[in-house]
Image (cartoon, rainbow, N blue to C red; front, side, top):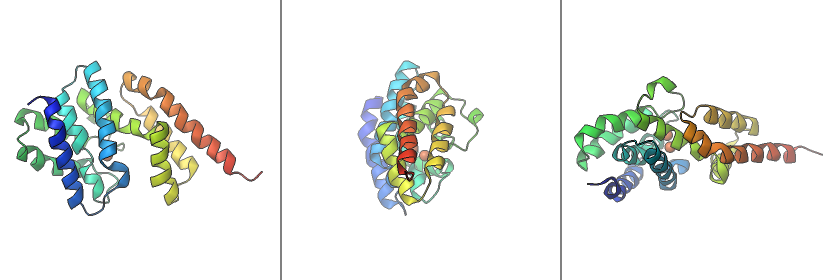
Length: 193
Ligand SMILES: [Fe+2]
Ligand SMILES: [Fe+2]
């Protein structure tokens, strides 16, 4: 099977795993997985990475996020393994896929992401914090729940500085600036005159 053929299969598995999960995180549903995959595809083609590894890692990386876990790479990897075995994903790819998933938390040291595919997954995931879609996610899921604007700005900077690849930084530059300027303006506008 070509990587393209895995997309509907993986999407279906991700959706049905979410249905069984105890606490679905709205910020990590299929639309997030699709955006992460589309960046993985772009970067993966540019950098000659294994697209089969990337497509599985992209669609299964947040399975553990729906268990009330902020740090969820290990849990996602644990949940991904039986799915990959069930759908008969090429065995020789599974170890790499699980490493990409296991090490995608921002709290995991950068040095753990030795594989180019792990770096691409991490960057593609964190790029979802930027741009208008990123702003919407921060507002809906964090600001609305009481996190402050300074906290969000700090997180944005950390996400940007933590990117592995220069190609990702290039991809992120405009959307990172947009998100930062939005929150700075919001901070200013909310101040009493
Ligand atoms: Fe995640
Ligand atoms: Fe994610």
